[in-house]
Length: 237
Image 1 (cartoon, rainbow, N blue to C red):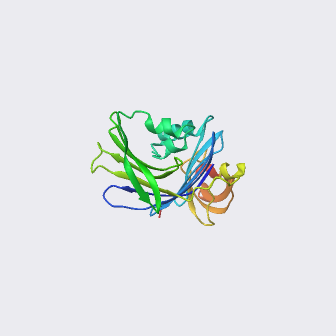
Image 2 (image 1 turned 90 degrees about the vertical axis):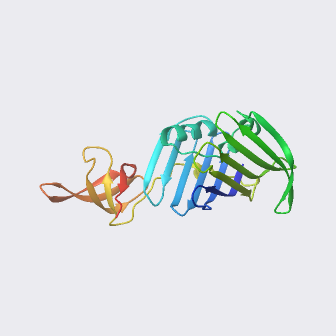
Image 3 (image 1 turned 135 degrees about the horizontal axis):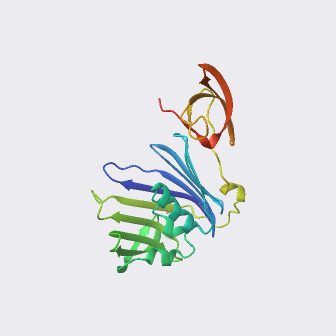
C-alpha cells in the first residue's frame, strides 16, 4: 500500500508545514521522506534494517530489527527519541492501534474536507494525556489526523492532512533498501569509528558504501585512506 503524499504541521512556538512522502507495504516495508525548513530526513525499513538519515546534516543511524512496521518505529523512538505520530495509521490494524489506550470518545459529527464528506471522531488517551481527532471518508480512508499533546508546554498540536492515496502502485523492494549518505568533494568530515576516530579529513570522493579522504595523521604528513561512509559525519562550518 502506498501513500504518496502526506502534509503535516506541528505547532509549538512557530508553525511550519513539512512535506512528507510515505510509501509502505505491510507488514515490513517502509520509506518516509520529510522535507521542511531544517532540510530532509529519511526513514527506511526493509524488514531487516531500519535507517534514519539527515540529508543535509549527514547524520546517519542504522539499527538491525526484524518484524513489522510497528516494531521498527517503536525501536526508532526508543533508540533515537524520534516520535512518529502517524505510526498508528501504518500498523497492521490501524483501528485497533488508534483505539489503544483510549479512555473516552467516539464520533462527534461529520465534516466536508476538500469536497469529501467525512465522519469526525474525537478520542482522549488519559495515560499519555493526548487528544486525538480523526476524519474518515465513508470507506474508512483517513483524510485528516490531529494530535494534541495536552501535558506539554504550549499544548503543541500535530496536524496531518492526508491526500493522494494510491492503492495501485507496485513498489519494488529497492525503494525500501538501505541508502547511505554520500559527501561532496572537499567536504570536511570527522571519523566516528575505528583507529582514527575523532580525526578530521577532507573528502576526495564518496560513494554509498565507502569514502576516500585525506587527513593529517603521521607527523603532520597528509595521509589518504578509505573509510566506511556510515562512519563519517560532516563538520559544521
